[in-house]
Image (cartoon, rainbow, N blue to C red; front, side, top):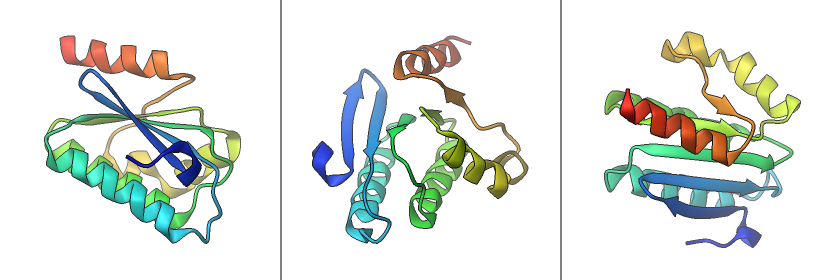
Length: 127
């Protein structure tokens, strides 16, 4: 798996994949390609719970936004979920402008930290 220096760090926590995203140049399409490939490979392998940690990300590029939207759409079809963590005001504004809830009929799931996101996903599985 790519390391933190490439813009992504992936950690498996039980049945949840945590994608910790770090700042990278919007022009580094190879980093977005790595993120997309990692996410879609995990979905193809049957993984259904994802946390995207934006705590170290200053900028949300259109290709990265597309990756998250497509992943959400694929997961929604199979009962999977994504929880977003550490959104700064600029990144949150991008999701608001896109109209996430209008597009998917569901609110964007967020938490302030990874522990809260893991708990949210755990509770959802018990419901």
